[in-house]
Amino acid sequence: MPMKSPVDSTLQKHQELVHCALMQVNSHVQRFNGECVLNTLMMDGYDCPFKYCRDYKYQNLEGKQVELSYYPAIELIAGLEVDIMKVVQIKAI
Image (cartoon, rainbow, N blue to C red):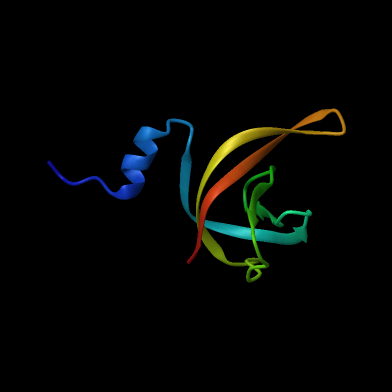
């Protein structure tokens, strides 16, 4: 039996987790929200933002390809439900 990659075993444990490779970043915004630097990515072919926090500013990923692991989520903004993707792992390629 072939060995599973770490990504495969993680995806099997967490049914809602999605992993995508070679995603193109169209826009990358970083802003301080009081506790951390909130990063918002817009990806080629997607209409919803991909969000994650870091303790410090990171390199600009606009125009680069990335590998992502994320959970689909819903965020309440001004009383409206907005679909977002909550990033748990990102790797610039």
